[in-house]
Image 1 (cartoon, rainbow, N blue to C red):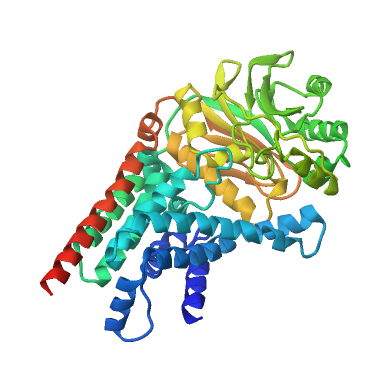
Image 2 (cartoon, rainbow, N blue to C red; image 1 turned 90 degrees about the horizontal axis):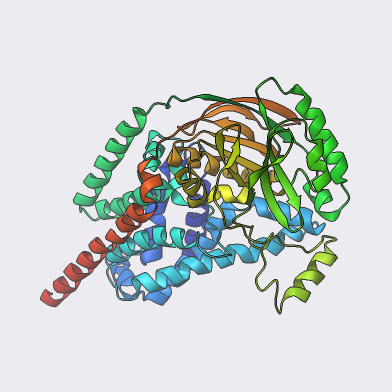
Amino acid sequence: MRLFLLLALSGLLLGLCGLPLGWSALTPLPLALALWLMAGGTPFGHPSAQTVSAQTAGSREVATRTFWLMGFYFAAQLWWLTRFMADLSGLPWGGVLVLPLFLLEGLFWAVMARVVTWPLHSLQARVWALAGGWVLLEWLRTLGPLAFPWSDLGYTLLPTPLAQTADLWGVRGLSVLVAFTAASLVSLAHRHYRAPLAALLLWAGGWAYGSTRTSAEGPQGQALLIRSQFDSFGRASGRLSASDQVQRLAELSRSRQPGEVVVWSETAIQNQSDLNRVPAAGIYGVYLYPNNSAVSWDGNRQGPVVYNKLKPVPMGEYFPFEGGALRPVWTRIFALLNFRFDPPPIGQSTRPLELYGALYGTYICYDSIFSWIPRQMVRNGAQVLVNISNDGWYKGWGVTQHFQMGRMRAIETRRWVIRSVNEGVAAVVDDLGRPVSVLTRGEGTVHARYRLLSGKSVYVQLGEWPALALAALMFVPAWRTERHSRRRKLWD
């Protein structure tokens, strides 16, 4: 029981040190404790007994510890989902329905822990293997229709100059740095100094690099961003008129200044005829059954490129076997919730939208937490990134998390990001990831001024491969430590 409580407290502490709190850069400290506990360490009893316990704990024990620790980690990071589920279900106890998600996430980490530690017996070797496996699992969570790359370690460095190195190796590279530092701290406790010294040099070099970065120059763009406050649940259930929504957005758009393009949020327009009612040229979120799209409008006609959402939200816009054997089940569940079951198809193109000669890399809501989507848009010529979103589904901490992850896309690609939202954070973010103009409450507008930039960062050119290679290299000290441990046992 004491060990279980320690695993729970460690997972909660790690979660509370994560995004978006100001002290999140301290994450390597609780992560070091978490890796040590997951690998088989225990603070109870005599030191010699602790060593024996760690060495005799098999990979199954490691997986079990990881399951519980990470379950509590995600409970801390995603606790806001309990409020969402209560609102969605209309039940005061509806929050408990999301608890299986926390356990599912813990199961993913448990499987990873079992795989990477099954041939290892040394505690330190396991720590290094878990650190490398952690980052590789973060990458795997970006793949497939059920992808859910929330709460990656790299975002915890956003409050520091180290975040600026994301233009070299992406947020995954920052995760490598956090995991490597945590494993190095465990090595330091065992009086091994090479890895901690390397981590210190990486932090110093990254800090110096980030501190000297400056915003790039380029032609100025102008846009009117809108923050609306429509009830997302009412809109999904049909209680909110799409026409009334367009009318209210048009009223908010009257503050448009000459030269500004107008940006409306995700699914702002739900009828083709309403597209003719927009107030000016701009970028508009359009939901025309069954597509969740974004289009450009020059004042007379729609642009030649339509962007369809690439990453539908798992269990929100995408459901396993939704077109097959489980369709009647999903249809029944949605009927009970008084929602229409019409999941949109998955988009295919990352071409930017063009308006008056400028290329707008436009992506929708959940797309913003996937680094590869803005990256591909920049590779295709995007000069500024536009994130249109309906954050009315997010609650509390989730709203801030979504915005902070979107800021990382600006750093990785070295592009300004502008956001027009329903609920959430309407904002202008510069190419260093710094919020320039922000509106977080009430209905209103932001007169955005941003730079249209060109050029491609190292990350845009190379993608995830440098970070993944470095994550794989963390298995080298795991192998060497394990080999040294076995030799020492033979001599003993």
